[in-house]
Length: 312
Ligand SMILES: [Zn+2]
Image (cartoon, rainbow, N blue to C red):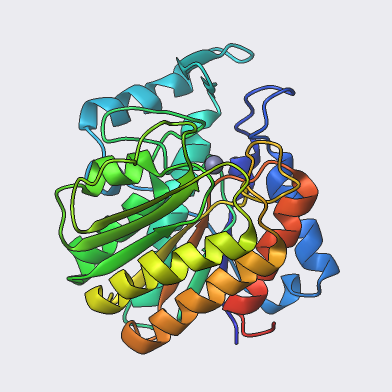
């Protein structure tokens, strides 16, 4: 089954320096691996548009959006820090608008009147799940998955959407944005205690945080998903599923101390597809978040995509 694949070359122009792990090469590594796995020609390719501001100000303060966009005027070769890990250049605003634009497009492709696709994957950067309503954080500028979910609620009238975040870091930004929004069920698993040192307190019954210790294996991760996420999802019965797809919990990714493998990402994707088929007419939008070891990132995304494409 064909899925939508959304990308834009502007996403490669955002460059935080050679030593920075969130690098443009991540996108290319994924595409190379998709070619090797013979799936690159079997997805429907779409170019991400620039997100219109109205989609951003639903989930971010207008003042913050303007601040990010104002850096487009920075002279070439200059950069600034929005937080100690998050570097902005004059190319960043456009890349961030493409990533958020991909989120809008993915939602439109799945929910729009043409019903072009049931499933969309966005191979875009910068990532988004640490970006809070009022600020950039942890390599993230605009919260792409939040933009997508808010679009589904506000423009398509969905009353129940689920965001699943299996990045190794807590999706603090997504939680911040939707903490008072009962139409969103947010499920996040993450290494704890670990950056960004949030998510261990229960703040709402529609925020399902699953902190797990360093050294967590695939088996323990699967146990936690079955124990915490699946019952919550079944009870909530989401009309659409959004995935903050980060792959930095892989055993080969030295950003964290989790021991997940490609088979674990395929497994969790399959579990989510079962939920999507049961409640959400199979509708899934997945967006790239973290994953910094290029080889394991590319292999894991490919495993994720094969399940989304029913090719596993
Ligand atoms: Zn991460």
